[in-house]
Image 1 (cartoon, helix red, strand yellow):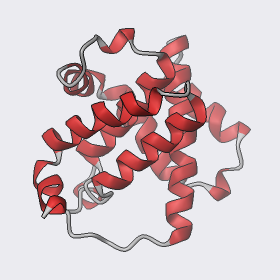
Image 2 (cartoon, helix red, strand yellow; image 1 turned 180 degrees about the vertical axis):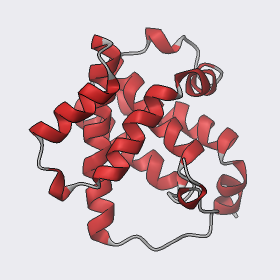
Image 3 (cartoon, rainbow, N blue to C red; image 1 turned 90 degrees about the horizontal axis):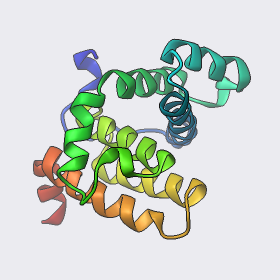
Image 4 (cartoon, rainbow, N blue to C red; image 1 turned 135 degrees about the horizontal axis):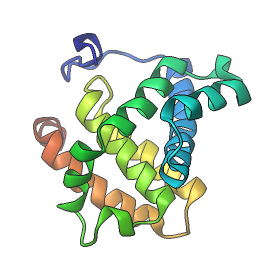
Length: 160
């Protein structure tokens, strides 16, 4: 990860088009991570399959690629944040929910240019779209705690 993507919490305006493209990229990234978790296939092969099977012109393909590769290579860093902020093991969580939790936690840690509220809201939206009816409350509660730990200064400054 280059330092250029780790912009301090000074908010850089993001166009609506880029925000929409990143939202779609997150959904695809969640699906790719889910597939990787379930199959154990090479993350490179899975990403290639997603590039081959989807119209990437409406997505932020670099963001998608970074998120998928980043989550896959950072599990040992991500899961401890999750486990200390929930009452069960990461592996016991539904695989779709697990991929959403890992994706958002990766983004909290590595994409400081994206406000934590955006990460949290996107995770909840994806959960409502792909998971059972009340899953979003679990995802929101866990990620709220994770955000307070990882982005404590940003979270505090938004409460003032």
